[in-house]
Amino acid sequence: MAKVPKQELGKGIRALLGSSDALVDTKGKKKKAGQSGMATIGLRQIETNPYQPRNDFDEEALHELAESIKTFGLIQPVTLRKLDGEKFQLISGERRYRASKIAGLQAVPAYIRTANDQEMLEMALVENIQRADLNAIEVAISYQRLIDECSLTHESLSDRIGKNRSTVTNYIRLLNLPPALQQALKRDKISMGHARALLSIDSKDGQLLALQRVLLDGLSVRATEKLVKSYSHPQVNSPTPTKDNLTPLHIEVRDHLSRKWGTKVQMKRKASGVGQLIINFKSDEELNRLLDEIEGN
View 1 (cartoon, rainbow, N blue to C red):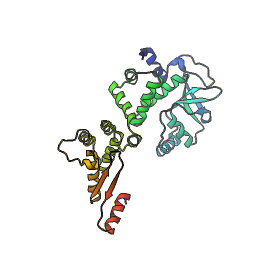
View 2: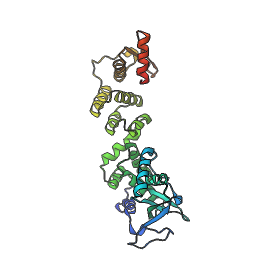
View 3: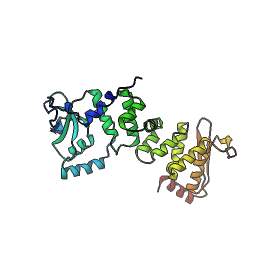
């Protein structure tokens, strides 16, 4: 892939930061250098951005922001591009736009920019990447989209956003995790350090088993790394009941459940992955206790 020239790499950021020749007024006419690019735009004139990398918006946080907007107004303008007629499209600020609608505003202050679709994507992604409240998966998706859709290499992307190349690569690797693990990361059940450790396990099933152990025991990143190491490089003398096809990690899970529930737990597994989990109990009273444990009561 040909390396994108430096001047081309800077185009999106210059537009994002407000290149003076990229400003237009609400009628779509180009403004002269030095003139303000601010305007007040009706919410009904604004369309959302199809390139928005964020899909999840915390409803509680949106309503908190809406209450703030009711009291103080929208302090930070949204950024728009002019479409045909009197329509505009969001480049950045969808959270502020949504909260403004909840707050009952009819119009919002906005920076107006001219941008074609490629520049639009570029600006939206770069602007969102710089936000501190994006989760690791949203950042990874944004990085991957910039690479795929703006023809960037890992190196040129790292130059663009001011991050080390290894940082870019580590984020993008997160997209190789199974969906359940990505969801745990998005919901802050595990950290990026946990996720990077779990990536060292070759199989998806193994990663998911290890995730359950991390969540059940509340393992730290260091403890997770130790768990992954013991799974990937089991000791020669460690007991492995091959007749039940249990890996060291399966044994860890079985033993954890035994400790958690205070009873003997047996696990049998075929090489295909099909198996049984047998929970022993000595009385109906103990059965009820175990049911309460399993149901979280």
